[in-house]
Image 1 (cartoon, rainbow, N blue to C red):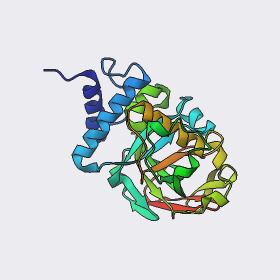
Image 2 (cartoon, rainbow, N blue to C red):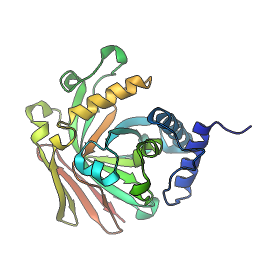
Image 3 (cartoon, rainbow, N blue to C red):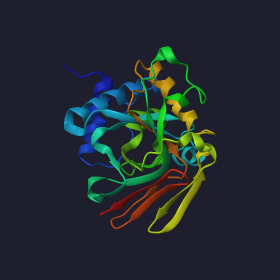
Image 4 (cartoon, helix red, strand yellow):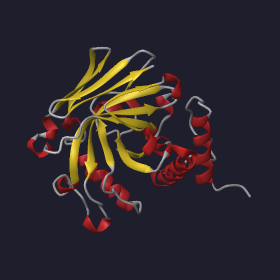
Length: 264
């Protein structure tokens, strides 16, 4: 019996990633026709990775929350993706270039969630979601777009492929973050000691808590929720940069510290 298109699309993306194939659009008979269907593909893809040993979902990313990222990818709406347990790193990290097809990095503000966020507590917004944030931190998102041509990417493809998330690196947790004006915090990306991009927290939809609230509401609409302990990447304030063996990359956010990655 042939698998349904959602399962088949997820398996196609999973097998292509495991084979380290270059990214490409899904075949027409598998391509999700809309965003809701794409999230069903993403859910199935996450389940395949978990079954393969990548770990449970322990957090989420919100993609395309800044103008620079929307212009880079050519998609003008936020998208979510899951972060799996084996792909969460902390502090100063070294990773092998050969573990990826095309390793990219982004500089972000991340948060850790203090409590479950069910639909009964929503809808969530920038103000009422503050109580659910236990800590903030500087972070690196690791992405692997498998060198896809962004001219071929649309929102359903990006979402179906888990918004290209390949992990994250988290800096030290800052629990007194309420003393900071998150939207005004300057951040920057350094590669091999040279600043290659900069922004402020407010580049992510005006305030980092706005994409967080968007995510909480979107998950509720999809029948699930943010859970206590989840880590959320709120979106890059710097356009994605791609790394080569030997590169050393750092995310710094004033008031929130730093995280670093060396590619070997």
